[in-house]
Length: 115
Length: 114
Image (cartoon, rainbow over the protein chains, first blue to last red):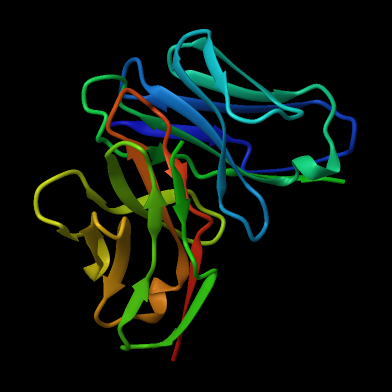
């Protein structure tokens, strides 16, 4: 069966420090991969999605970047964190191509607090 | 571009009462529709999805939703809620064309009181 791993679960970082959040998927090949952010009291904002290795689509201009160095690995990064980067970050995957009607499967999330 | 509107940010309800969480969407093309639930500090879990066919969709935990194309709505219902249903609920859409994006609403917090 497929599983998605996301780490760390919680993270407290000072303003101006770098960030690296990692997400890996097991049990599937060529997944679509997504990074979402959930700010306090707000819904899920799509940050990045990827349909293949090295292919990244950015949804909103921001202080973050994403990379997909391997088929089932998706990394969210920042060179210098801002206070506004605080939030709950969720990685997700879905089936690539074929059945576009499939849902996305989510990791357990990373709670990032920038202080 | 498509969008999803969840009009109610919070819905308080007593245990064993019925509940409806509203979701409206906007899209220039046909879409697939989803409802997810999120418990505190956890990821999202799929409750149900509408792909085609019958407009009444049944999901897990006794939830169901009805797709109304003319009103572009996909409201979530449960005839009798439990304390354990307290959570955040998200409506989401994905275009039926080649888009891979899954767009979410702002969420509705269901608060079930004894």
